Amino acid sequence: MKSKNSWRDGDSVGVKPARRWRGLLGLAALAIFAGGCRQDMHIQPKYLPYQETPFFADGRDERPVVPGTVARGHLRLDDLLYTAKENGEVADKFPFPMTREDLERGRQRYNIYCTPCHAYTGSGNGMIVQRGFPAPPSFHIDRLRQAPVGHFYQVMTDGYGSMYSYAARVEPEDRWRIAAYIRVLQLSQHATIEDVPEVERPKLNEQAAGSR
Image (cartoon, rainbow, N blue to C red; front, side, top):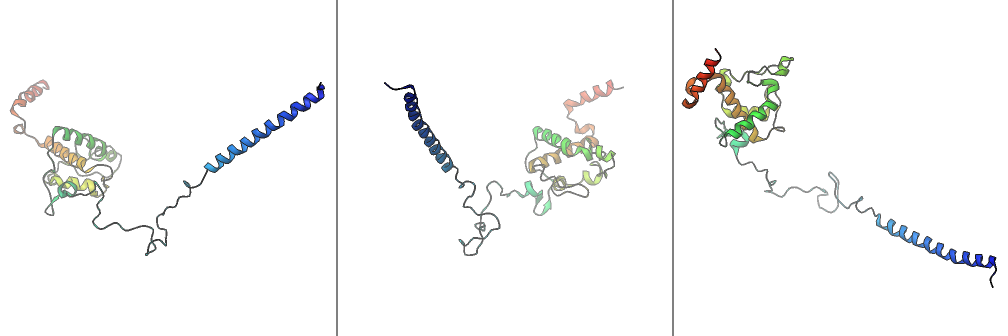
């Protein structure tokens, strides 16, 4: 019959191997985890800009573009759309038909980007002009009324005088839509009754009578 003390000794003897196994399992798990933390994704075998490499004969890691390569979607073959020119001359026509939706889009873009200087009517007395910024010319002067529509596209693209380029802010198609809306503003300030469709003229007469 085992004594009380011998039972405790036997119990402690049985516990030690269990603790040892737990310790070994913990070390094995740590080794597996540490082995998975490799630096291959952090230190990649790649070429960085402006570095040298012995792999290529010229020692450059950056390779020249294959002759004839064109970035997909960036080949600008439509000169009228992207330069507002035809046969080297500034065009006085649009590269695509202007619908009512295009004019509404042009009005929206004009109100966002152009009104601070040019005002909503195109008079050139926008809000920042009223605060001291140099005033642009009115769109309603003869020089700009007679300018080809491509002129406005080019000014938006390249800038003019105190106006910087909007090419990075406004897409080419929207620049044309803004140019079309400028033509609308010009017509609105110099329109005659003959410019109004006959079916709409009675409405003007009613409005005129109501304002008296």
